Length: 164
Image 1 (cartoon, helix red, strand yellow):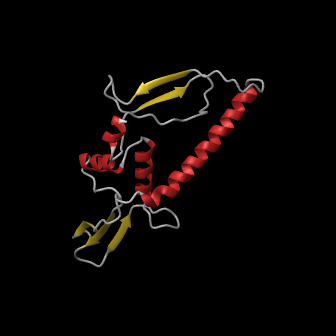
Image 2: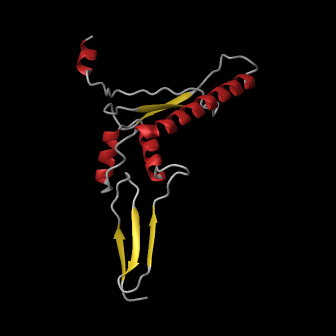
Image 3: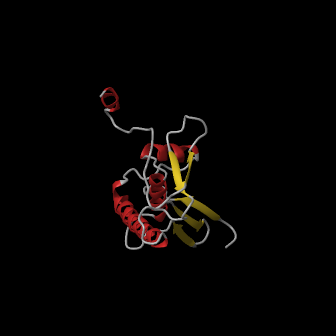
């Protein structure tokens, strides 16, 4: 039918996930499609990726809300807790991978665990106003350690920490 196609957005109650309905106003044709959901769960893939991205860059839920607001997107998932399983899996895999890379670097160094590492660093922003930075190993091409460094403190009692 070419007479009355109409697109509607269904109510969104799942973070950044969305559902669309394409229906005809004249005939009974109707098709619905939505964001992908992670296999075996009711969590939208876009929400998993969003939380993973925010945590990967060291940002909190508040930064995510601001990001979504600036892009005129719906509010992100309000509960980060369901994604802790993903975070724990990422931590486990990264630690195992770094452990393996360390063993490989030791073997390449003739079984000597005194490994020379050349590093290069950068800040998130120019000048001294950046809160986050990163240092990468450029000598071996292997990631053998990760340390999160930040000048930002999320402590609610930050003032008492500074006084001590």
